[in-house]
Length: 228
Image (cartoon, rainbow, N blue to C red; front, side, top):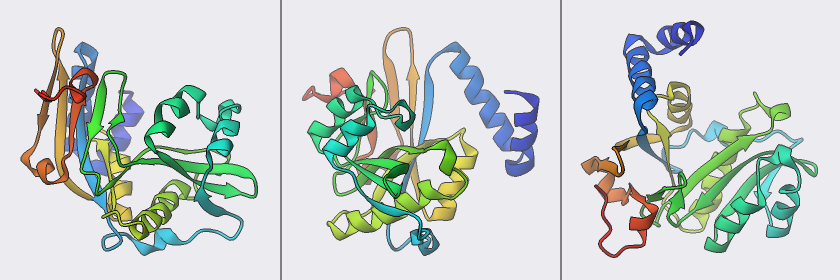
């Protein structure tokens, strides 16, 4: 971590945060390590200020045709291979548009979803999982990512879901603070460590009621369902 980053982390989040970020970085220099903070937000906990969208924008779910058209534009950060993996399982993209121009989006699923080439996140399908949020550079600084989540939460709640479930790595203090401001509530952590060959996955008891855990891809479809 650069000195400037350490100074900013200390000023905003304290010495404990600096220690955690340094420890996290050091472990990842040696091997693969992730510590995922599970989060949920519901219409009851949501900061309703985030439902307000400027008049120049509109928000909606994108069609499959629109998404494949976007995949032809590298600036969208959406690839055809990503669409081919996630659209067949019913995942949807909720976007904020300025006219016909894409400004921001997030992806949503109620089924197990890849978080890496080897790992898959599992959760109770009564919740909708939010992932792959992105705001195009020209539209950053307008809280569009959070507004998109808030408005999609409203839409999915109307469809019968309890709320949005997601995670933030515990070394990402700015994102954790942003989630807290929006109304997300922490419920438990999943820790993932890779040894010489296998992943070791530890899920805190608080995650059980949300069905929230991570499995290796090969195990995710194995009835024995090993999770470490």
